[in-house]
Length: 405
Ligand code: GLA
Image 1 (cartoon, protein in one colour):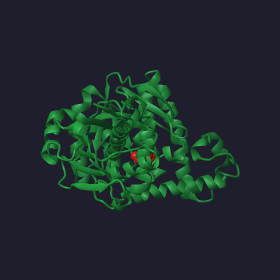
Image 2 (image 1 turned 45 degrees about the vertical axis):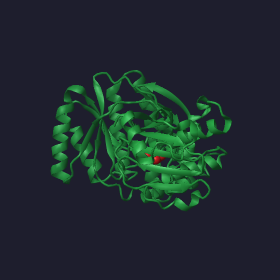
Image 3 (image 1 turned 90 degrees about the horizontal axis):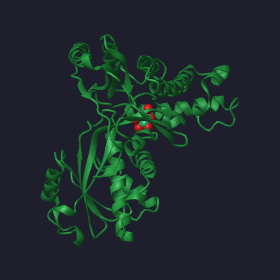
Image 4 (image 1 turned 30 degrees about the horizontal axis):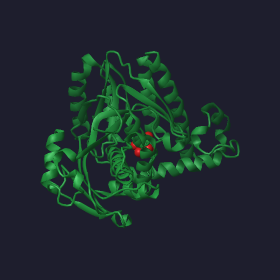
């Protein structure tokens, strides 16, 4: 839908201006905010371990049409859902179990807790990121909501235009907090950070421990990033995700005697860890730690080889990453493994791996342009024959981070 169609839809849902403040009485006064999804190129399950990740923001995004209200009500609607939510800013704890709307209200709650003065408003959401596919549709909702509410709230309270002053890194942190505390998934910062800070044609080399980052130009030569969706529902994702996180904490405890200063697993260098791996008495935990620390190295190597245009080596690192996520971290599954296996059989595929949390969701592959048609046809067919599901393919374009449009 175009922005003007979305604005019309907004007026259909909420009316011209019955409850709105006087300034926003016409369609032209509706505000529009957007935040993208992301694909992680490499560096999986490293962020909550204080390690490195390497995501890129996508063009697929969440757009919000917003109008402020004179009272404390937040009204939510979406173009693809019949649910309508009406919530009060004064009792945001009451809505944690909503099927839809809890991300947005969790963000409002966090903004208030961080001292932002926000006002009531009406919001219409429209997303082009497939839900539950590991491309961060939820982070994009959180970041777009945070930016919209913080921007409008600041302007209403200070009567000045403060958009430049809204700190996007802080919006990312607020989105993450909302997901941790309000939605109950103990996710790291990667998705929200990429959604807030991404830049078209770049990937972000992010140190998740202190949020220092570098934008790395994505010079992919004759290749494109192809995202393949398993279309498998990620039912176990949240509980297994939190379980992996706990296992890493246990791993760090084992290693504390050798690394008393380390607050995160990701602070321990891989080769130093190898000298002390005997400290970990449990094989499962050892495999988890081995993945996190070797993956951390692969992220840094990837940024280096991409910088000098060595795409073949980047492809090899992607393949190693997937192997590690399958064998050591155990977050792949038949759907992701089949997609990667079939992808790697196609000439012209430099690398392929799962992206995001795992247990379903998507793979990301680096494919020579002239092989993309074959890739889609053959991988799609083989996947269907072996798994019984139809995959979806997105030739991914990178995009910019969150902004007001
Ligand atoms: C999800 C989380 C991220 C990150 C990835 C795995 O996308 O939201 O914080 O942990 O999984 O790399």
